[in-house]
Amino acid sequence: MSIREVTGYVLVALNQFRYLPLENLRIIRGTKLYEDRYALAIFLNYRKDGNFGLQELGLKNLTDIVSAT
Image (cartoon, rainbow, N blue to C red; front, side, top):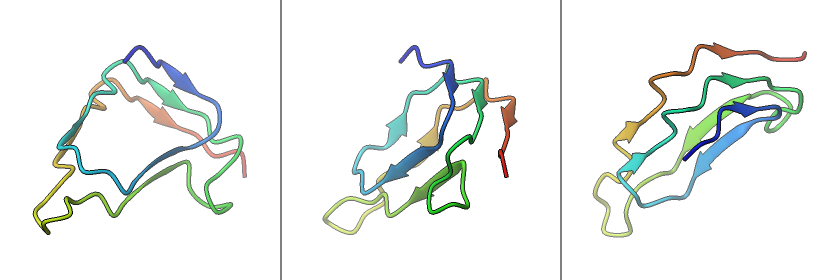
């Protein structure tokens, strides 16, 4: 993916994949927050068979998470 900047929040939830390729993401600004608290929220990422789903986030270029509040 070629996403480099997010002005609001990033929510990763209810997915079954193992890897999330966000290598180009550099900054999450957090001008709007998930549940008015989080600029980055990651939860409930598992497969239907009960095995692990998400095992790796490709956020190797993420340098800053800023919250507006």
